[in-house]
Length: 114
Image (cartoon, rainbow, N blue to C red; front, side, top):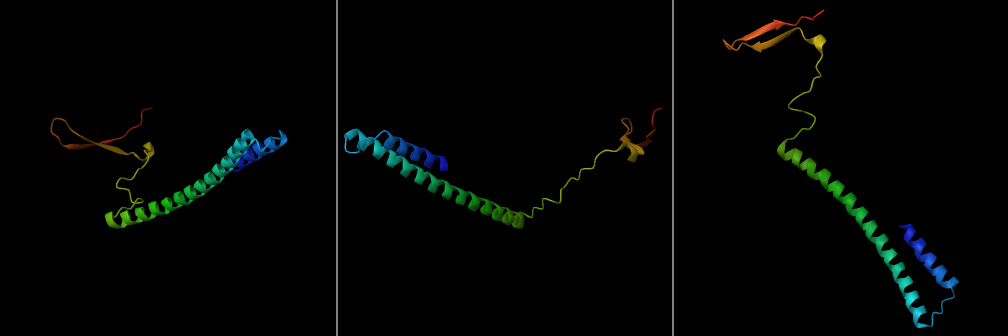
């Protein structure tokens, strides 16, 4: 948020460089606008700091909730119900299939075509 402070400082310098009369109605208005912008910049910095604190707090709450769910429901994310094994034709020696007519399981040896 440093850029907000830089812009407000630029406007203050511009107002001083233009030698705006702070006693005139327009000068008072412009200086009040610049002061208000500086207060907005301060408020934005405070809001962003609080937001970052809340974001960090929510992260820790999420971790704690995940631990509670694991404890209650017994989830173990490392123990998958289905393990994935990549297919490797070199490991395949025979194939099992069901016969359509007799519904019996048959084994057929895998033979490479040359």
